[in-house]
Amino acid sequence: MSTCFLTSFYLAPIQYYSKLYHYDKVIVEKYCHYTKQTYRNRCHIASANGKLALTIPVEKLPNEKQFTKDVRISYHINWQHLHWNAIISAYNSSPFFEFYEDELLPFYEKKYKYLFDFNEELRIKMMELLQIDKKQAVFSEFYEKNINIKQIDFRDTIHPKKSFNFDADFNIIPYYQVFIEKLSFIPNLSIIDLLFNTGPESLIILSKSHQ
Image 1 (cartoon, rainbow, N blue to C red):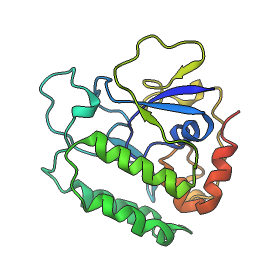
Image 2: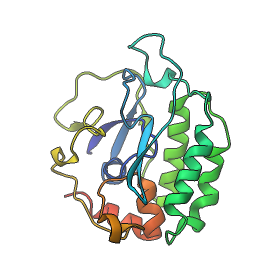
Image 3: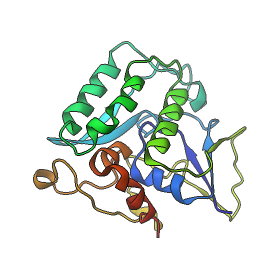
Image 4: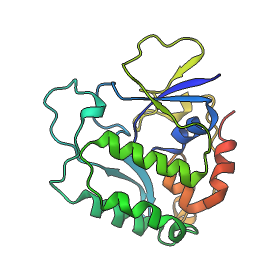
């Protein structure tokens, strides 16, 4: 049985969902130390002007070693309204936006206390919409330092500031994007880019994304 370790991400990139699809067992890390400028609280979508980062503000950390599961979302700005408007602007004309928007809108209306809870409920919803019917990921009960040779650790390697080319098993499959004629194809965006643009075919693309 193949096993991989992932961290909890906000509307994670396609690379992340490729792991959820292809690995027999996925362990989502709760006890890693929260670090800034990662996919934990940001995602990338394709706007009319290019790749756009959407970032969830978090409350000021009491120290640098807070567990990811304990990080609280900040509502000092109405980020949910801003993110949803950005998503509408980017994908309103995509082939499948109207089909899925009602499934995702509640995540931008309900207020969540913890970032981890928000991310994980959203991940489960995305797996449902993508029809990834494999066993749900499990949460870690402690931070596992000793990864054996049958396990793959992606906890710190899937990162917005690191090239996804490090991942020899991840295969980029081009697909239609709303602004592809203007911007050319932008790889490894948030999973919603794939979902809104390809709908049910998302699963086919994910199935081909692992080599």
